[in-house]
Length: 327
Image (cartoon, one colour):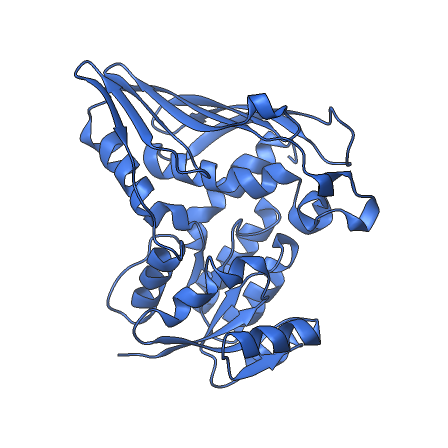
């Protein structure tokens, strides 16, 4: 069995529990090295997680002969740069979502992956979680009948950090780093899931506003879209809503029933048909990225296939950029 020796570019919050430990949980995989531009951060992470090597230069990590795969866990604006660097060195990559800070960067990543023959995977890990596997089983079973409409609704109150000034703002609110505001950070999982369920979105239009003026990017987004299957849908995202309006919901309406589920809170799945109403609670693993990371590793080892590739992830960026009127 081929041993996959990972190098991490970036070792922030997401790598602490969601993803990092999972790389050592899979047979034939371990973390060989980590990199952060901040020396103390790289050293501390390596020591706490018992990783042998750490770097402050991404070129050194990618050039390490003992590293044969790279996990990119940096803000979106640097995803394309690091992905191209690794793939041109012949090293497969696994990238945090979204794939990049723009649709154009996604195209660049796909082009180099095709030219080099080096695979690129994206961390849309919710596709692989038991909760969303169950959602897909329900949709695929046909119990909802003909699907007519899909609705995304997300409303959260502003955080204290959202009131910071300038560079003190979270990077997720700095469009040159994140690609947009909270929409570009939270909508990707929702848009990936519904396209995994109903096909690629081929038309999308959006309306954006900055109602609270807490920061420079949009804080409210409304959108309409159409899938290649003919199903239509809409989305509403509000990042300044009152606590009483807090909501995390995707609703699927068919002529045979209604299905609703959450994306971030994992509330019980609600299914209503002519047979009655059912509430389904599903537990997820402690390391939420473990199922997809196992799939990526098995793909690289030649014993499985991971369908969460950069090509399959690119439509998410296309839809977001259309909604934000980037083109």
